[in-house]
Image (cartoon, rainbow, N blue to C red; front, side, top):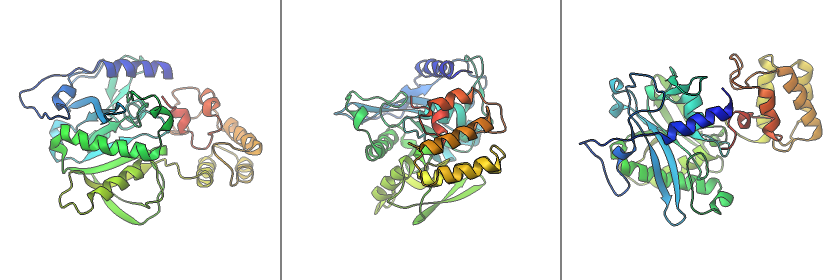
Length: 344
C-alpha cells in the first residue's frame, strides 16, 4: 500500500474515533476517560476483546500545546488490571507513534492493502502490557500547539518536559493506572545506546532486560526516564511507578551508527566484501547527516547492491520501492529510519 494512501487511512481512522458513556466513570478536571473511549474503528475486525482510548492532554495552557495519545489495554481475558503500563515513543525526530509505532510495529492492528480494513497483529505488545502511544513533540502527528514559534524552538529538553507533564495529567484522567508498574519504550531517535550507571530490571512476560542510562546521554526515552527518576526521588510511593525502559534501533552517534550499519549489511550478505571495505574507509569518522562525497559514493554503491530490500525487515517483501524512498533521505543513509518513518 502506498504511503499516501496509508496516511489517508490513518487520518480517517483517527478522526472517526467514537466515544461512549458509561455508568462507571473516572472523571476529574483533567478530563473524563470515558469521553476518550473508542467503541469501534473503521474496518476493524470482529471480536475486539480490549478497550481503546484516544484524545488530547494539554501540557502547556499558556502556549496551547496538547499531545495526542492512543491507548490500548490488554485483552480482558488477560486481566489488564494486573498488566504493566508501557509508554511508546517514536523518534525521527518528527515521527508519529500512531502511524508507525502502532500501525506498523507493535500496535494491535495492521492495515490491509485495500487501505480500508484492519486485521489483528499477532505480535501486538498489548497482549502483555497496556500500551500507550504518544505523539510527541507538539507538531508531530495529531499533537498540536497554538503558538507557531513552538514548532521552531522545540528541542529534546522541552520534549521530555512536555512528555512528563503529559504523563502526570494522563494519570489524573486514568487514575486506575497510578502506581502501576511503568516502563518507557522507543526506537531510533527516541532510544539511544546508553552508558551503564544504574539500572532497572524489566519484567515483561517471560523476558527480563536490564537497562542502564547515564545522565549525560540520551534522547526522548532516556531523557524522559531521567526526569521521572529524579522527580521520584524521596517519594515513598510514586504515582509514576517507574521500573525501567527499553530502546531499539537506537540512534547513538555517527561513528557507531556507521560501524553497526555497515557490519549488519555485510554479515547479512547485503553488500560485497569490497563494498564493506570501501565504506569503512570512505565513511570513517564521517557525518551520517552530511556525509563526504566519497562516503556518499560508497553508500550509493551499497544501495545498488542491496536492491529493493526493506532494511528493517530484509526477509520480507518491501511495501514500497525503497529506491525512491532512499532518494528522500537527504544524506541520512545510515539508519534508514527516515525512509520508513519520515517526519509527519
